[in-house]
Length: 326
Image 1: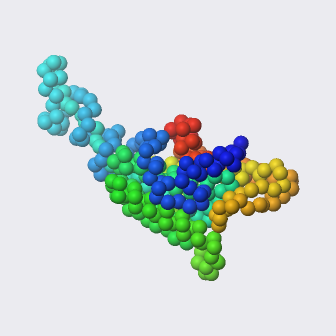
Image 2: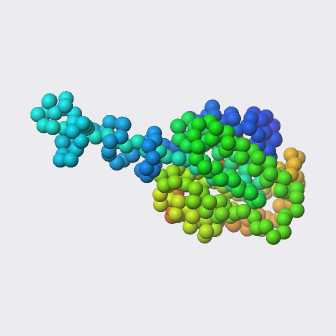
Image 3: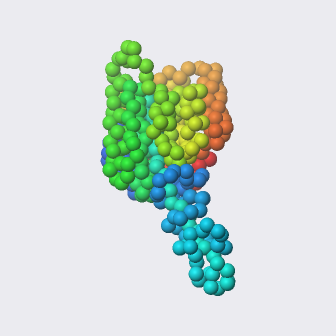
């Protein structure tokens, strides 16, 4: 059910947003809400670098795990003398290795993301979500890197730690979103093919280290076989989480012949002719098929996925659901 105009205006005021642009003030507020996101590893950490996560393999790490009977070849320095004295048999301590897990966020700000019919453009919601994840990464002490792109530019950010890495990522989000809005006011450059999700995923594949956690934020309107091939390769050595953005108008056309949609080249609603009932039915069937195909891809690849709407504040959606993935 769509929100009322007064509710939308109140949300925009709370978000300090006009619905189409992103600034640092909007993104800084999410550092107070990192508890709404869970970055706990769902699979074994494969990184060879020392860090703050416990691997399933046992070794000479810093985190005590258990004791067992001494075996030939065990380090005598790990003998647990108290247990040995109590049982009369030599026991040795086992430790769980700590490993690092870099986190990479791929944020799609391409042309299909520059759309929103009620509250925010999908690209703006994507920036808010990326900011929340980035602040959570900083809180857990992981290194942050990733990809930010629109149809004419792609930025690669190598992993770095502390607040500087987060602020660097937020800066690229605000800058590229502003560029993407400006592209709608300029004629398309001849001879230059737009950057697609497949290219960004290929670059992420080269950037990400084995054992990383990857967040892919997009509407996946341009998902193709090349994208699926990159995603399949990424899942072999990393944990990949899908964050899918959508808008109500993309799912269901209004019953009336005319509707209002917020477009990227201004803040005033623009009247759109939505067509006949037959066209509405065909459109809805097409969108349902697209959603089913996406879900089938995620299931086949074993990817965790989470859907977000551009028509509601991000925090409202997170507060109203479990903190895990489907």
